[in-house]
Length: 133
Image (cartoon, rainbow, N blue to C red; front, side, top):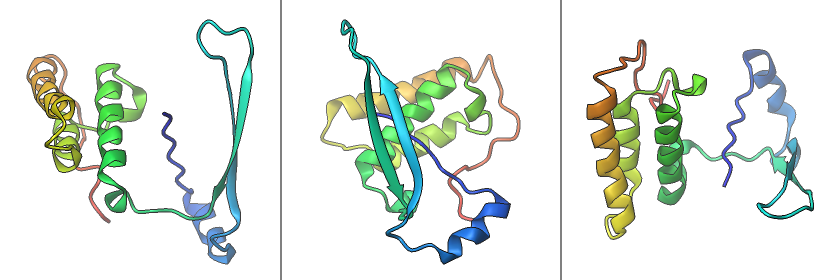
């Protein structure tokens, strides 16, 4: 699974007004090789100019985003400087399947990581990255 966020810049957002949902916003080409395979593969995708607000995505997609958020924070990724442990916990709590033992355990794992890592590294800024503006 791969996650991409395409966010038009301020100067480009106005140029999207003339597009229809059937038009292509971006073309993505992914080159990859499976483990233990000598053949390189390529997959191409066209992204239509059709988007769904994050809060309207299925819970499984939002939960997957919480997993990526958690992993990025553990890696100290440059892309999650504004994300707090509470953001990851809130997103996971709002989207996990209560009947899936692995997802329930994942939520508790984030809370444990917060206790361990929050002592050693405080993030500046932060705030709720999912708040509507």
